Amino acid sequence: MRKQMAQVMLGILRMTGRVTMLGIARWTEAGGSYRTVQRFFHSVIPWAELFWLFFKVHLLRPEDEYILAGDESVITKAGKKTYGLDRFFSSIYGKPVPGLAFFALSLINVNQECSTPLLVEQVIKSESEKTAETAKAKKKGKKKAAPAKEPKQPGRPKGSKNKDKTNVELTPELTRIDDMIGRLLSRIAGQIPIHHLVMDGHFGNNNALQMVRKQGLHLVSKLRHDSALYFSYEGEQKSMGARKRYGDKINYQQIPARYRLSSTTDKQVRTEIYQATMLHSAFAGLLNVVIIVKFNLKTNQQAHVVLFSSDLQLSAEKLIRYYQLRFQIEFNFRDAKQFWGMEDFMVLEKQAVTNAINLSLFMVLVSQRLLVDFRRLSPRAGILDLKACFRGRFYAAETLKLLPQKPEPILFQRISDTIVRLGCVHALPPA
Image (cartoon, rainbow, N blue to C red; front, side, top):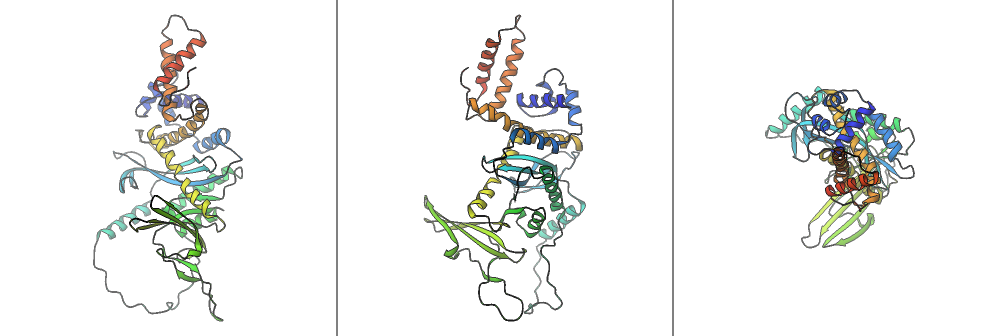
């Protein structure tokens, strides 16, 4: 298996065009036939252990700070037989599209600002999820006039009881993610201190927050721009009855100045950052909220973003930076799709699909390690230069095999380096 994987990885590093099994076989050396590549894609491979072992040996920097990030990627697919084929919402198209979806957990190095995927799993919708989505779509399609509601009686409904917002029932989606987080944390097993999990606004809700807290982590995410947030009540409490928790509701157009941390102006745009410990009726407990407000001084228009965390001690600077770093996982998906075949595979069976997706993201790790050495010669080099280097050396080796006499090693290296520089975007220095 190790030799097969080495052949497949070398083929992917050298090849041009779509990354398919036949394409990989054309760029491998002896021992990398099409049947060998087929057997590799249908083999059971412990990808989770492989990701962690490679990261631990080649990419881990124990002195740096790491956070955990999670995100989903959707791949459009035609046909009807690919395992897991369904309709998933794509942010690129802005609507549900037929294809496959994969959820990935990644470690982000805060110091290096680099993401490393460690666990990837395909999203398979349960029957309950499909039924709920169908019902929601039908309800949305029916535009009936809302019936007149009876006037609501003041006060609390008779017989109602307090609900424990920390005791939530996880959706099938959150159950899958919860299982993935638990397995990854048990594999890391204290080798890296992880305290925060960053996810996008889709997970900016109490259910996701409670899931993350039960794993011993703090959630960093985003709320809706019109979220009903309340300041904590600071007035005098009544002598009897429940203590009042909710103070004034926030007005995003007039946030109290005492919560402002900074104000900067750049090119007619003033940016103000506010931070406060606030309450939300749908969440259990206090939230660390950071609001970024931008004013266009020329048009007087205003926009704002609401970030939050369950970590009440997290500074606004770190909270903003953590959420910005979440986008690094999108670069992993981009590289996997653009260079390593995440959208190119043509296999249909479950195991083959799993291997194709994991292989494309594993190549992201491999390229990160190779670029560390490659950039010592060419600091601006990227993945295109890396592939050009491997392809150029392959061309040189195959061409020199035709010579009647093998050239001297020094001459061989000079010829190889010259061919490599021809295909590089950022040229390597002359030998």
